[in-house]
Length: 340
Ligand code: ATP
Ligand code: MG
Ligand code: FE
Image: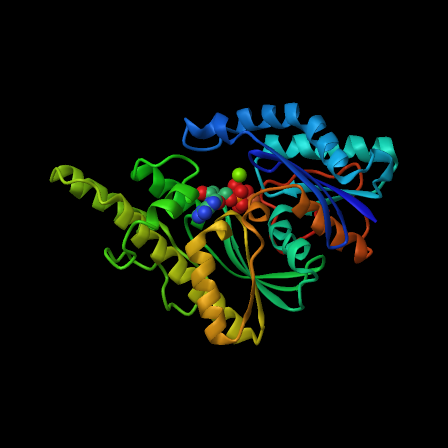
């Protein structure tokens, strides 16, 4: 079946078309530039941008796939988690399309979509798999027995998400928003072992994470340098910060695989685009005999194809479609791939 996926949880209006694990099109309109000067996403601005981008993005995705609305067999839409107003635009549009076309609609989980998207690049996800989800709002380790029906959270961040830490540290260093890409770039010029930053919740025997202490340590560095009139070693701070983040992420992800006897690790979400995370995960998985799957960077950040990919799983699992009563849920838990 041909699945059309709609994503509007944050600042990307994404529409994708998939058939099983086959990616047919993936169109994204981002309002990120409109938020840049505020240093974070402004919800009202995002909602309005979704409203304006929705119809053209749907049509671009259909055109790229060589399909028409009449060819669509089912729709999937992000029901949560995300920004209330932003989610509402996507869910309302999806309901309208589903009703007009007389096709089933599935309200699905954005976070599980971040994991499901990997199937479009690497084929069916082996069962079970461990997923490290690292995005702007979340940092979780998941035991995925089935994408549509069985996702269990092993650990979570107790404070900032990994992407949030990148964004906050970039701001401290005077780098642009979103902070992941410029820190990734600056870190390549720096020494990752020059400044050693704290590894939050290192070796505490849980699969939880903490990044706020790390952020505070960077802030202290910046304050001290400024007070003493020294030039800020931006590249070395970026490299040291990044090393602290990816060290803990990869260590705990590998530990989770070993403890649960799972041979496959998938890393996804916006921070999975990070070059150092990809390299260190590859190295540590290789040493531990774990097969690593990381989608290409474009699929790691928010898009509609990931929602269509999860929709395809839900359809294949024969789960009941959502009704037109489908509500958005700003804090939909990750263990519910399909919203009510
Ligand atoms: P969530 O999925 O939790 O609702 P989100 O959808 O806003 O949050 P994503 O779009 O998946 O998050 O990811 C955005 C985050 O990814 C931002 O915090 C951004 O800084 C980070 N990011 C993007 N590219 C990189 C990179 N190369 N290195 C590190 N972080 C990155
Ligand atoms: Mg985004
Ligand atoms: Fe996301």
